[in-house]
Length: 241
Image (cartoon, rainbow, N blue to C red; front, side, top):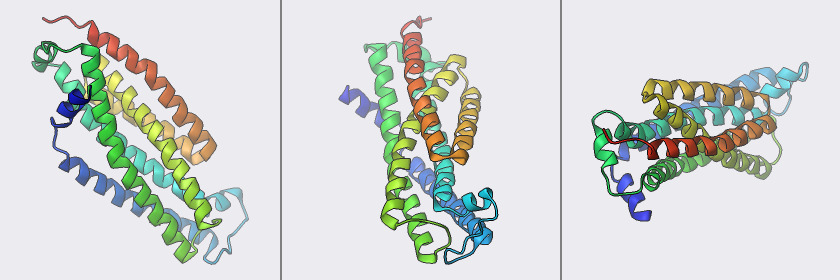
């Protein structure tokens, strides 16, 4: 299996995805700065936060800012993961490449698993350092300016780490479900449409609370497991033309 994964990892150029990760990071930081500015104008610097409404208090908290930054990170990396999945999974099983892929003297389920592992490893390897760097910059920058409500830096960083771990599960689930739907229809636009729906669902969950986001992300990850099992079964039953 390890050799199969290594072969799949050599089938694409990593540099464009690294540049894409950098672009996602910059956009997420820009939106983080925007939400800090919104929180500042809602309450002001130095912890003198307006409490005239629950909405104002929510907007002026570092937790809400981190949740919104994570939404943009998840959207960006789900797109990168889907693009990689299209290259390693959808493309080989459609069009003229289908016959060549099915002619490999390898168990189809093992080949699909190797492709999925290659996608997950690459996506997570790009996502983790980007997410850690982005959220750390937001937390430390906010602490330096005192723009938003927060507890201790250690406590805020611990919550950010929990958020990252939840996002990893959600990211794998989002990409897995979108790929399975795209494969069923043999269509990249359909896969993108599934991504948009899932990302919108996650965005609404994150805007509610961390607990709601955790439930939604966990549910998406668990749902992806049987969906991918169905995908593996469908591939195993494809007949060579």
